[in-house]
Length: 366
Ligand code: BGC
Image 1 (cartoon, rainbow, N blue to C red):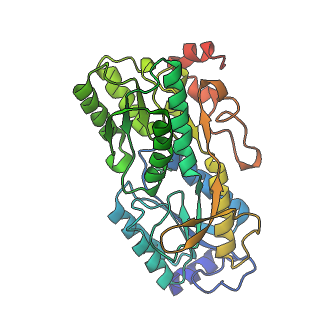
Image 2 (image 1 turned 90 degrees about the vertical axis):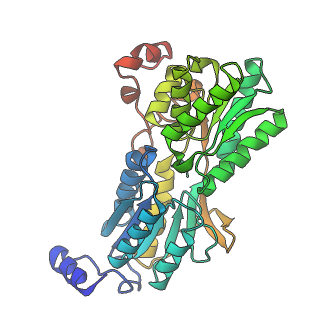
């Protein structure tokens, strides 16, 4: 934090400590924490990660100040946002990278200024400057998607597919892990792949084009299910099917994130499953780490539960558990109250708007 910014805070707020290295001695006093998220087409970031991190940080560090930016899936924009945050004198950087590999350079910049870095949700590769990593078991996410689809294909009488695979962004390390987990299930069951695409930027529009290409290439009857890596790409794939006159209910489609629109599609029978990742747990763990680092305090001893190889070091990690969601367990997952950590991930009220009222009634959701 620059000298002027420091005075302004002291005069303006009285008790707020100056940032930078000034308050590294420990014992509270707040600090500036940057949260840098990668994109906004996937709804989780603005609907969950950002507000939940903000309120959890307030709880764990009432005097901490949040500096927030979203890179809109543009790595060079994220670079600018990192530089701006460092110029503002942040004490901790929480970075969810657009590009897992090139973000190593951003970590180096932070390190030059003595700012600790938490790799949030996506692992930053090839840098020994990453202090912590907070995420879900991402191979497990892929296994949940893959095994649910394998079971459904068998139930539908087409145990070996073939399926269309709509993957996520090749610059996201998570996409690699989800793919590993899912493909292990397809290999074990002998599921054939009719067509497979990587989706730049995880863009739902591009996913729709990919699915249109797949349908054109293999025909309406040339596939029996769709592996979509997240709910955004599932939405694109389902729109392409509808546009081509294919009933999405007849082609089980996976997803991830438990987005509002995905839950509505599940209730309406258009999407088969999603994966619920409780961002309240992820943001809470990250806020606890950030609060401790910002105030020079010890990190709670029971928080770190794993370590992850990023190619340059074993990064101390907090790894949460994902849950598969179908129409059968909505109440116990996305609609469940989260107690202190916040409201349910989705509410029946939001899901069951007029257009879905009948489907909700049929599913016993009212
Ligand atoms: C996240 C997913 C998200 C995807 C697209 C992944 O790194 O783990 O939850 O759907 O990025 O933003």
